[in-house]
Length: 432
Ligand code: SAJ
Image (tube, rainbow, N blue to C red; front, side):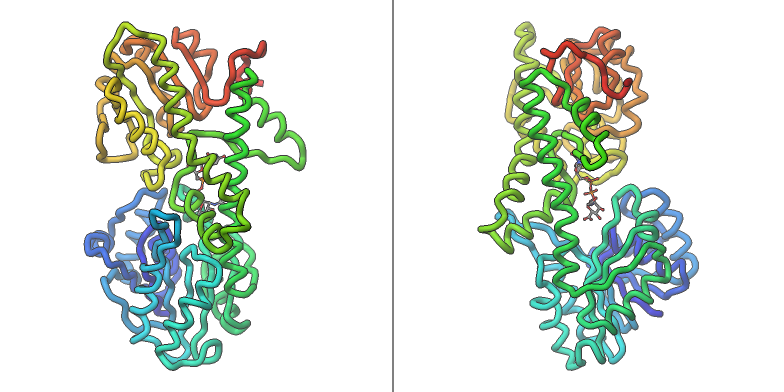
């Protein structure tokens, strides 16, 4: 089939490359000319394991071509972003303009699939009214469905194939045709429902995670006050067959979990107390960490300007994506304090303010190392050497990623988010 995929980002590009390497002809459409040029050179503009190889194969075979405008096809897949506005409302402009851009090319028998995370009712209230401009009858001449992507950045190519998929068709025929299309590469189970149920299901998956992380973050604060190690508490609680508490941290980032719950709040503002509270707890974590840093550094009054080396800026480990990263929020707070000099070390990103490429320079005379993102590379740093390079020897671990015993042996003043120090048990839970 000839498939036109609108939006060549974290979802659209892997999906395009997957269809292309399974024999379909793909026209990838993106409004950004640089992205289009990069892909046509068989290169990629995002970091994702093995995506470069897949895109290379797809482009070289001639099955994937990128363009800035759509053209006639059998299938149109919309995978453009749905960000939130400053006042926490879904910004549907990209979805609307993508849907409008395909209308002139629609013909009988076409399928239109929306993959973008969207508020409940989007297909019914936004997509269908736009598509109706083409005068084809929905469900008999034009087949329409919502089928959310659910892949985890860092594992996209595996999860595109293995994950179960939901298809919310405007009727059964639409769902069946869209299922047959995705069956090209999907090995997970495929479930049918209506569009609004599929839209809401996608949102509650990420909201479930956000609420659970907020719970873990609240526990971290409680445990610090109680002098208990939250990481050990969660690990032990999770030994129960029906408990699965997530991990605390400096907040929730990314373009999904920190965003999607707001779409539910927008849809039902009066009824979403828990969801909104969870969002607020997670959003308040950078400030909590900032206050922790202040109290750690206030002990040493000998140095006027204190150097803080932050390890990691991305929203999660081993990716290059900084969207909604809580570490950026932490940096914003730190930079307002004129007593602090900020240095960031993150081998996954190429440029940003305060970024150091040379670890030697980043640690020289530093007063505090904050492990903000547990990139694998940070596990293998030479902490003995870092100790020697630093001024004051403070480490704040926001991910329970470092071995406390080892850090203390090197001589560091080691603290960890959620790990109160009053407790008699100072064991690192990972060593149990
Ligand atoms: N985080 C915690 N504690 C945890 C887990 C995560 O603080 O226990 C933080 C991470 O540090 C990160 C954020 O949450 O800042 C989100 O990371 P993530 O790995 O949980 O999720 P995403 O945003 O990369 O991908 C999610 C996934 N959703 C679910 O697992 C329910 C993915 O399957 C979705 O496809 C994706 O959102 C999306 O596009 O919606």
